[in-house]
Length: 529
Image 1 (tube, one colour):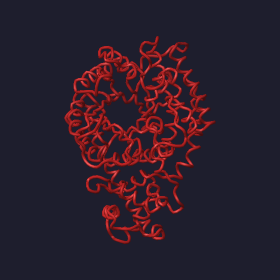
Image 2: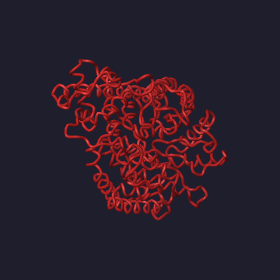
Image 3: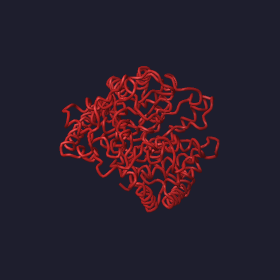
Image 4: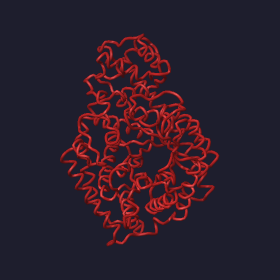
């Protein structure tokens, strides 16, 4: 036991300092919670309808849920929320929630007076629909987890070992879901454990979720319910043949964050890219729109057992990886606290970081090992997501492959969980089949060759790695203290994260945020989601 404990604290970190950092993150998040819990958004109201099973579009174009919420806003009724009025109309007409929403969307029905939206009948229907929504999610989760358990047990028996770690994660991004399927299945047979379907460029800025299967997209494929179904089925088929479970990843960020989360929960996804600040920093989305939406999004992920992947790796694409390391750790603490307040266990928090130091900097590998081990030790229960080098990639595919090999070694040596494989053609084009094959081959080799290295190595207590990790932790505490003093909104305005400044007011989607009235009915609170 003593030996195990020693190896879990190789950096000899100050535990009291880590506790202080967590307490500062708690202060930072708690300062925003009253505003978050008092507010809702257009996307949250649409999420309620999707939670209740509403789907489809008008004339194959405008999603029904968008049309309904747009009508509610035009009637100046949005602050009461959508749940009460829909419950009242179902009570009045006897129609299904789908039919009521279609008739509202097409203008065949009008909204009931506010007095009818808080009646016992309206509330009872809202509670019934919410219970049904929970059962749909629970059924999907049970089906997903049963397959996962069976295939993982099968793998252990056949290979006489524990489930592979780290999970090797690759992306597909053709724009066509059917082409994505071909590439994803090929990646599974090449050794991938997680497949991420990259979203079409700028989907995060769309204030609606497209319907149906999509075959055109720029830089990726649209996140839709039908695309989720198609890819889930394809990965399950490939997983059965490969004899192991394959995790499906997509993106719950931007203006439809909670909607995509509810669709992911209903259709058996395993992971979602979901950060508390990414949309603000990198997409200039309204500050409170992001904070309010991410809070519900994470409640949904917690209920569905979906691992979130946060976006700290992105900070290192615009700021120096060595000097900006404290901003990464500070953001991880803040993301952790937001997730905990949303009811998410640490076992679902795929906090992000990246291997992005300048490769020609002396001791660049030691810097990377220090921050990777630091993240691993500060968040021991989290399935950390480790991102590959991209910033210093060039068209030299041979050096690129060597750089990825160093990343693979750092990941295995520090016990990371989710390992996004670097591509030797990173700076040239979207990965193609042979790129992924070579990337997975190299990652599998190093994962196997250095499998137990994390248990074998210790760090010099007076050496470079321990000193750098200790320095980063100390600067992180000071940075969190500053953010706690000025507030997170002002910290974002000053460009503390990623050197990108976002003033407190402004940003896309601000018109879609509102304070809930006293008569607001929250379906998610009814079922303790």
